[in-house]
Image (cartoon, rainbow, N blue to C red; front, side):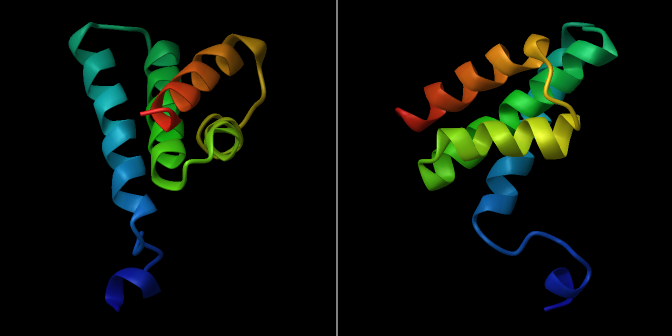
Length: 90
């Protein structure tokens, strides 16, 4: 109950989004990517998590672009779409 009251994730989507985002961040850091590229990998991991959990790739893309990145740029759009659609087909 404390987790919900503090704004933490309580459903099944929270942990899978966090795992996807942290995998993107970890891989980016291990490969010494720039901060901008790590941000894109975090968004792609989160989009994949949403898409896989709810079988909703468009929702995953919108969530990642709006909430994680905070912008709709073409440089981000393609990568996030590929991650989201690829996860939802599995």
